[in-house]
Image (cartoon, rainbow, N blue to C red; front, side, top):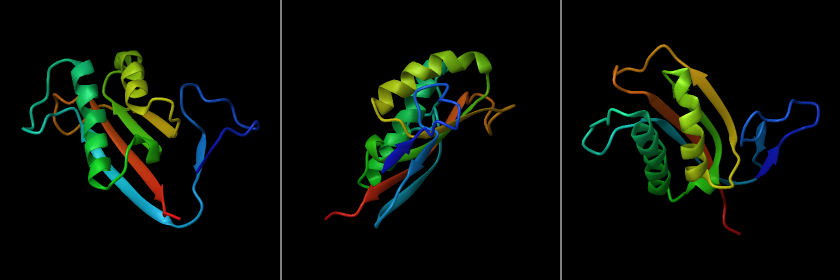
Length: 130
C-alpha cells in the first residue's frame, strides 16, 4: 500500500492521505457505517463517548476479518453537528495512530436515529501473505 499526496493536489487539511494505492493480491473488507452505540444498542448522550464507540466498533469489525486499523485504506465519517469536528479529531487520531488512510468527513442533516451524532465507515485491505 502507498499513501499518496501528489504535489498537484492541495495538501491534506488534516491527518489523512489524498489517496491510497493498493496493488497485488489480498483481501478487502468494507465496514458498514458504525454508529456510537454499545453492544446492547445503547448510545451515550455525549458526542465524545459516541465517537469512541463508533471508532471502536470499526475496529471490532476489522478484527472479525482478521485485520486492524493498519489495514484501513479509506474512511468516511458523518457528523450531525459541525461543532463536533474538533472533538472528533483526537479520537480519530487515537484509533488510527500514525496511520493515514484516505478520508472524507461529511456534515449531514441527521442519521437514522435522532440520538446518533456520528457514523464511521471504513474500507480495509490486507495484502496476501508471501
